[in-house]
Length: 127
Image 1: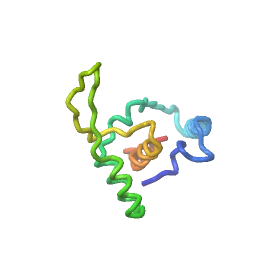
Image 2: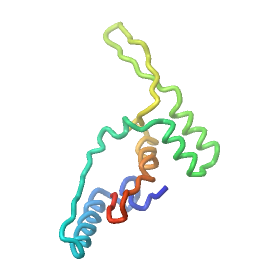
Image 3: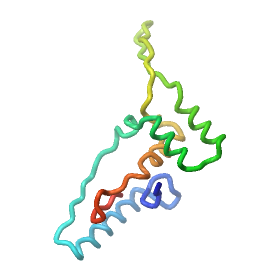
Image 4: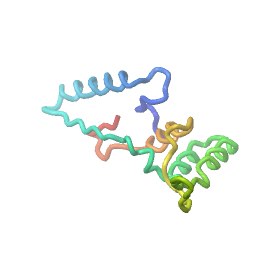
């Protein structure tokens, strides 16, 4: 897994740093290419699509201490969702995907999940 291209959750990184890096990359590419295509994707619902099994596999590959891995695994187990309307409560359904965005571990788990995304061509960059 590669974390060098991440601008989130690092003391010296920010949205501004990410934009400066993007501008620098595009400018550098324009020196040797007639044009550059920038594809921006909104990942606002990305936290909802992460399978627990996938994120746990990535944590396992980090070779972290067993007690930390077991805590993370426990965090992702046995989540369910239901709806309450007045005095009525729906049947609870198990959740096997999604990362809780408001949790401390949520954003880090998403970065770990996305850390091994690589471009399909060496001429492409992912930032």
